[in-house]
Amino acid sequence: MDLAKYLTTRTALVDRALDRFLPRATAKPTTIHKAMRYSLFAGGKRLRPVLTLASAEACGGKMDTAIPAACAVECIHTYSLIHDDLPCMDDDDLRRGRPTNHKVFGEGIAVLAGDALLTFAFEILAKAKPAPRYNIAAQITELAHASGSHWLVGGQVADLEGEGRKLSAADLDYIHRCKTAALLTTSIRLGAMSANVTPAQLKAITTFGQSVGLAFQVIDDILDVTQTSEKLGKSAGKDIASQKATYPAIHGLEKSRATARRLTRAAHAALKPFANKADTLRALADHLLAREY
Ligand code: GRG
Image 1 (tube, helix red, strand yellow):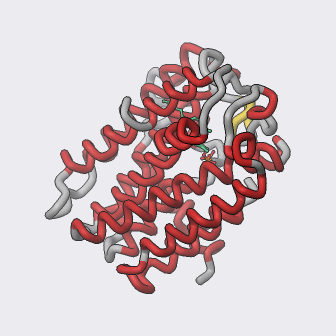
Image 2 (image 1 turned 30 degrees about the vertical axis):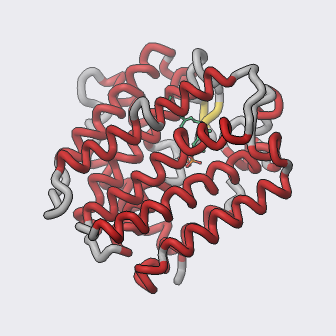
């Protein structure tokens, strides 16, 4: 399959839908809508929404039915990046190759732009078509749980509390699973739920998501050490500078690369029940493993 073409068409689909869903930049109060759009349309890779769409396709679903969930996960992801970049969190100046939201709009508006994207995600998902096995309440609960104190927010708490402390490999795994793998897994699960998958298929695709999600963060840790800020569009080398616990710091580069390959193999194995319908998901898992930014 032509993955580059797939990524281009699906990203364009997501971009158009996000543009339709989001309030216009001219809607009052304009500052907040400009700030939301600034980060949402800053050139993110759209991996989570593309995974939602590919998962829906693997499960025999339709693009139109999966697109609200795809847009909702991208709004949550973008909110988390805006808040993570704030001075009270990671204090970063560069994101998606541009000055961070608070650098352009100020801290107050950046907090509110994140808040507004977080709440907007649920407004978008509430407009999705219910599936016979998964009504809208079930889909909203799925997204709320992954974004809340058990997972995304919980991972950020563990990360903040881990600053300046020596973390074990198990602590780091916990942070990565919460901060990164959970939202990626939910992106994939929501695509499958929109396609009305059976519980057994949902279990299999969840295993795929957990493996690919952790592999994604291991690669992210590796790229922070091996790539430049220009290539990544965010500040590279920050993890070492802040003596942050990362996969390469704890396990070394080669062992980290081997772990990412092992997790990707596990992701492939989980897709067995979907046969060739999951070829795009397989190609995406390989693409995430080989990515350079
Ligand atoms: C503030 C609640 C809250 C959570 C923040 C997302 C996050 C948790 C922190 C950001 C920093 C970080 C290491 C996140 C892990 C996930 C990750 C690698 C995000 C970057 O995802 P990409 O590469 O980004 O898909 P783009 O910009 O391409 O969408």
